[in-house]
Image 1 (tube, rainbow over the protein chains, first blue to last red):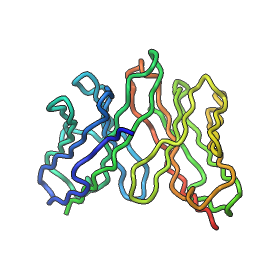
Image 2 (tube, chains in turn cyan, green):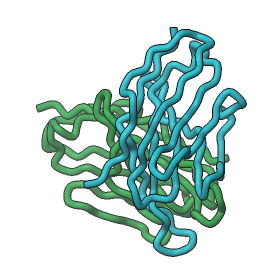
Image 3 (cartoon, rainbow over the protein chains, first blue to last red):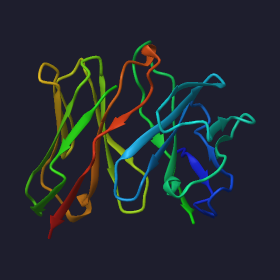
Length: 118
Length: 115
């Protein structure tokens, strides 16, 4: 079964440094997402991406965050100047186009990147 | 935006018993309600989902019910097994053509199945 893959599995960085988290969505999927999960808490939406542009973002996704699809397979999340509170598990997800207009198709999550900011 | 409340936060059952987890949502426009199972340190995995044109859906030992009028939906696990132990998250989102793609998750229920 195809999977969303994420690298690295664990990233340690110092406060103020830039990090790039990488994802390879499932190949025939068209919608891409980043979510984060602070330890022991719920999964929170950051951003969705479709047709090479952001389609929706949350309040968490402020100016220090950016996303990019640099080629036909990768989808990246960049955090420009990391803060201690950015420490979390970051999940990439993808979904296919719905069968009909208005119909959702399931999200498939990657295994996540655990970001630790020291 | 959408707000999803989930309870209980923890649930302990004996092996073979049933478990029920309940969620409510705030926005009547939500029309898609997936449930995810997350084992410790792993990714959320979809276990069942339901769309708003359906009141109930079943897949072997797992079932989900949806009450659109009351804006609540529930996960039912029958004949629980120790491997069902995990954190379960409900979620809600809107029709794809609204452009609102975010899944809003509940706060999670830690299910412990005692052998």
